[in-house]
Each structure stands twice: as structure tokens, then as C-alpha cells.
Length: 628
Image (tube, rainbow, N blue to C red; front, side, top):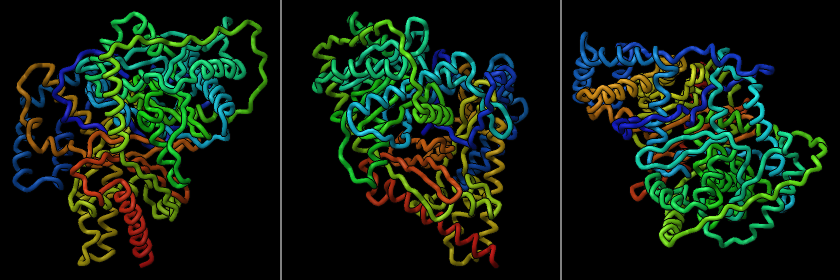
């Protein structure tokens, strides 16, 4: 989860614009070739007075009366005529006129490239795909070949600009992020990473922690056929049977500054430098995984989520990765497969669209294609010369990875009591209904209103990424506080629910239109830094920290082709909830990190049960009030 306050004061450099956002589902329009890209509108800068009003409205349920009065004074001072707010607003509006997107570049640098936490489990989301039907090594290799072929087909569509445009609510969406997932890599550096894209024609394959370069095209420019890929993958597996090699990839799981220091030591050696560059410049990385711990059927998804997020730990597959890559295709044993994505490259909506393309690719019937007669170049193993210091860093990375894997708390729930049909029958948006259930569940556990962020896509704008909509409102706070009050009758509760739902839907629509306050406040604060003026009191006030100290992050995911996303939270004692719904079912995944201060009864499973109960109680409320 992303927190504006923790990193907003970091000064940053320049990188190409590049989380997990998942709003309403996007619609593909076949036969288009990115023709809408140039005509997309620019992301607007919201009016200053409007943002200030909404900011105070959001804070009202979270602050004590004296705190709120103090904040109101600071806001009035900030937005007064001729004040510093108007100055920064004018600067931001000028920036919007002179750039393709006034928000995205600063956002990517501040929230992703400048973030120092590890990518594994924290920043990089995973995608778990529907279980495939293979059970042995030969089947794994054959399936991996089909998976790679599907990835190359998507890459070809992107390169040829034949990828269908996506639309949402009838509006075309920015497609730039698709190309940023391929042939891309995040490069570690102290304080601020960079993000690079390449034009090389190879992929990298990692098996038993050992990396190989495999050419992706024949000499005539055609992609390797599935049969050719099988030959190459078998060669790789036969050349990497050792399971006790030092897993250099585990270094990419480290905290970014630690990895940066090791990285600079690693590439001092010319062989290492060439090997690292080969991985970085590949189209994508293919991870042929080994075993994972045996679990019962009801624990399969939990284990598979962990495999896609971080590999399961150093003794399993965490060293069989290069987490800096834009896209990693993961093929495990016994039918488990999926992907790991870079948030620096693209947001969750795009991750899920790419996942749908990849799953469609492996489901296509195999067409027998004659492979070129020319001999295939043998995949080249990448070698590393490891000093004692780097070997020590690898051991340290293993320890940190194992602690992270142990402390990640995941819970997946299939709620089959009802789905979107029941909710829509009561003329309520399913997404908003589930948001109310989440707020009620959290309030019941902690007896307080917390800052809650909901991801909203901004791809309707040129180079648009995401915004985090603070989904609290006075109306939703009033509803959750009243719901379990025995003095309040059901009709009044239903009325409060209706008001909360309407207000939430209105704020969501405003965010989709680029009128959210997250982007605006972020931009105004960054502008103050750039102009080197004293930081306005509104941004140093404790209420500003409270506003963005998110304890509950959530996002709707359009479930495409049976793909399930998984994403870790940013800090302990914070929950991240991803949910999707069908006609008669709601699925949601709760993720959090255990910490010494976390009570045993307040874990991911506890919140999941609280959400289930909240959904059932809301259903009863709707049925009782509609009947009466």
C-alpha cells in the first residue's frame, strides 16, 4: 500500500514515467491499434477550493474537535486569496499545460522508485492463474513453452501496435503501461532507483537459481515455435541440475539500499556485469520453479499466492527470481503457474489485462508449425564470480527473505452466500456495497474510523496511472458507528447506508474524472519542494499525517480468465484487501504482516471473518427494510 506522507518529503531526480489499481473492468475493442492514444485528454488539476473542502470533509470523522478546528485554520490560511495555496496552484496548472501528465512522473519516483522497502512481498504484486494440467517435469517444460509463446505473441501485438484498445465507461484508456512491462527492468541505486527499457531480442530463464540467456527469435525474425522452445528449455534444465548453487537472484529481494550497495560491488567484475545486463535487458524472465511445501487442498491457494509474491522463502523458490524485472513468468510444479509484475512499470489493472492475454495464450489449441531447419543456438548460462563479501550478502538476503515470508499473513475467502445479482437487485453498486462491508468489519475489530484508501484508475488520461481515493466520509462513518447500536432502528440504519453509498459513489466518480484530492495534495506539496519555499503548515500538521496513515487499503479487481491477484501490504498492522465478484459469489484476499505488537486475534483471517459477517448483516438489513 502506498503512503504519501512517508516519502513525500524526498527530493527526487528524473526517470521515465512508468499499483495496484483495480476499478471497473476494462472492455477490449478488437481491431484497434492504439489509435486513441494521441487523442486522450490530459489529467486535470482540480480546483483548489474544491480540494480543500473535500479534505476537511474526509478528516471530520477521524479528528477530535480541537484537532479539526486547528486544521480548519491551517486550511483557510493555505487557500486564502493571494496565499501560498494559490501560488502553488498556478504553478501546478502551468506544469499541466507544459507536460503530458503533471502527476505521473513525480508519483512513480516518489511512491515506487524512491521506496526503499524490498520488492518481494511489498511492491511487486503476483498473479495466480487457473491451475494447469501437468504433473511431471516434461509436462512443466511443455507448458512453459506454451506460456512463453503466449507472452511473445502479446509482445508482438504491442510492438506492432495491434493490441486492442481498452475502454472503461465508454472512454478509451491509455495503453502505455503495456509496453513498459516488457523488455524493462528496475535498476537499484541509493535513495532512488531508475527504470530502463531495452530493445534486445532474448529472454532469460532461471532454473535451480541458475540463469540462462535464450534467444527468442529465429534468424528470419519469427518467434521460436513451441517445439523449439521445448528443446531449449530441456537443454537449460539438463544444464542446471545442481540445486546447491548460490542463488544470486535472492539479492533482488533485499531492501533497496542494501541491494544497491551489493549491486555496485557485484558489477565491478566484468563477467558479473555482463550477466546482470543480460538479465536486465531480456524481454522477460521465465522462472522454472522447483518444489513448494506440501499442503492440503484447502491451503493450496495460500501457498500458490506466496509462490507468486515472493517464491516461498530461500529454501524454496525466492532465489529463482529477479524481482527487478518488469515481468516474470512463473511455472511451478504440478500445474501451478502465474506471474510477478513490477509496479514501477504498470498498475494492477494492466497486470490483470496482461494476465488474461497470457492465460488465453496457453488455452489456445496447439497448431503444428514447421520449425526452421537451422540449428538452434544453445542457451548460454550466465556466470557470476562471487567474492566472500557478496556470498555474505546472499546469506543475509536469505535470512531477511525467510523472515518476510514467515511474517506475511494471507487469507483467501470464497463468499458464496450472494454476489452482485443480489446487490444490484437493491439498486446498489456492488463495489460500493463491499466497501461499506469493509469499513464496518474494520470498525467492529478496532472501534475506530481509520484512513481507508481505495485505488482508482486514471488511465482515461494520457499517461495516467492511479490515485488513492480516501474512501472515508462523514456519511460512511455515521453508518458504521450506528450499525450495531441497539437504540437505532433498521429503517434509520438503512437510510444511513443509503447516504453513505451515494456519497461514496459520488467521490468515486469524481476520482475517475481526475478530481481526487490525493493527486492534488501530492502535487501541491511536491511543487513547494521544487520551488524551495517554506513548507506550508497544512502539510506539516499532524492531521495531514493521520489522513494518509492508511490502515485499510482495498481495491476491486476485474477477474479475467480466472486470474487472481495477490499483493502484500506496505507496513505491519495494515490490511490490503483485493476483491472481485460474480453473479452469486464474492472473492476477497486479505494480506497483512505480522509484527510483535499485532494481537493474535487481529490477523488476516480475523478481518476476513469480520468481512463475511458484515456482508451477511448488510444483506439482512436490506432484506428486512425492503420487506417492511
